[in-house]
Length: 177
Image 1 (tube, rainbow, N blue to C red):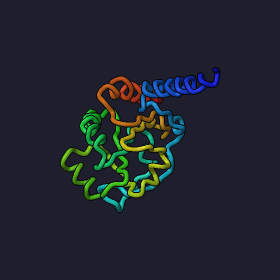
Image 2: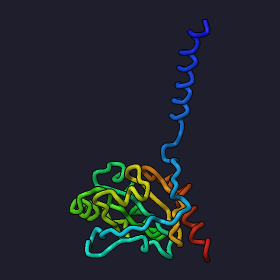
Image 3: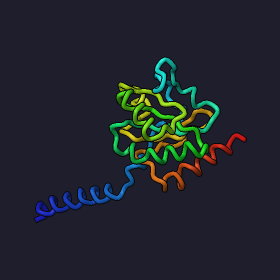
Image 4: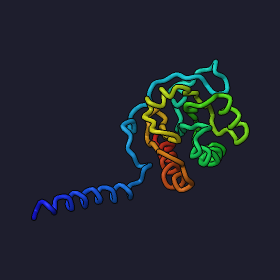
């Protein structure tokens, strides 16, 4: 008789795991890089590939580093918020153009506004791997010492900006004053 209950018990256990997973926030995936210095890298800049972009760009200022691509619909959705953040001058916004065509990326920024102080070109995705990028968009907040303090996976919403990003950015601006 007990052997008939085993499949039922297994079914309910699996269903419990499924239901629990459905209520988890997919943007809340922890990153082993939070609390560690940004990975070392050197890439060409989007607007002038003769000039290099490296981790030294982040030194001495609080920065937002956004991984984006023109083929990414979610990136297009959050782009106006990045432009708004950049225009507010609250944080220096940098970009990592991920596995994209340079001409497409340039054209997109001309048409929709360029929120980036500078954007690096990661044509192969190698640097994205070093940053632990799961997919685009992803956004990192970096402190003045070049330490990653926050990682946001997925589209940044106005709610994310108001409740998470701006309070952290303000805190980081005040830390070493």
